[in-house]
Length: 373
Image 1 (tube, rainbow, N blue to C red):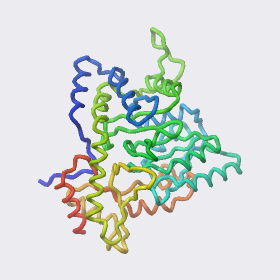
Image 2 (cartoon, rainbow, N blue to C red; image 1 turned 90 degrees about the vertical axis):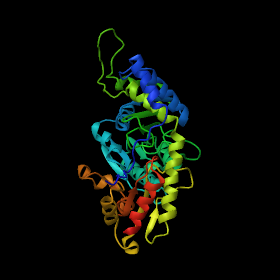
Image 3 (cartoon, rainbow, N blue to C red; image 1 turned 180 degrees about the vertical axis):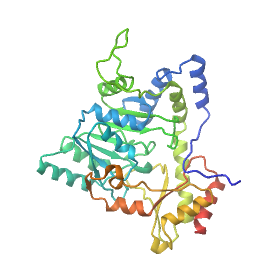
């Protein structure tokens, strides 16, 4: 039987099991404990921020981020359109309305010029958004500086969704640490994983403390169970935090392995007609969480979907680039500013197997299957 080659699988190191065993030996199994505290501290040190709250998912972190800045029902939130639905679902959780912003061609992320133009238009209408959610896509930072400048000019909080970009850099700093709040994901397919988990970071100590409070069911300090606010069961477990501590120690190795995958693919496939790889913007280092490329069917001879299906027949998992959120049925009727760039990337874009545990033989199998098309 041919071994399947999957898109992006968990890759454990040497220390994770030690930390998990420690949690078992000390019976710290509940969603509190020394590993959670240590994971938050070590994560702050790794990315260069001051405060962090470990939660059950990146989606939970984004939900808490919106609540922490006071987003209310009916508010508008500007959001990148080329992203996974979890970047926008929490907007609906709080009853707000997403407005989707198209990508630029340099980074595939939110177009800074479109954002500023949209904000200028909203000033004329007297209806500024309550926040901007900026997604850093596929391990590539967006061009943060002009986006942050536009937000600051109009007093709008910037929330960075860096779920896919841990280990990347923007002008020497970690994306997710520039805006008022940053969020990260440790889902099983991410560059490091806790099985399921996320992190919210901010320079504001009181904001992060409030997030921790909400994430643990908003239990008031009392000997009995007392609640003056509605909270959530969103705290990361001590066991999973132990996995995260071990994973954090090999983060740079995982980045280098994924960048190596990209280099191998680019060298083998980059000269094929109609093939273009996702560019690496000059302002920082991409992790290449996923290796993404576009296929021009007129030049290549067939379209992206035919390539994907051919790989699938060889037990190789590849996926289309994210379907833009303004095209998702669940967001039908929501406003979109631009969209043509994201739509073209979706129409032609393909993500190749990119796990940090791929072998040279795995990569060669993918390349040969691709070339056979």
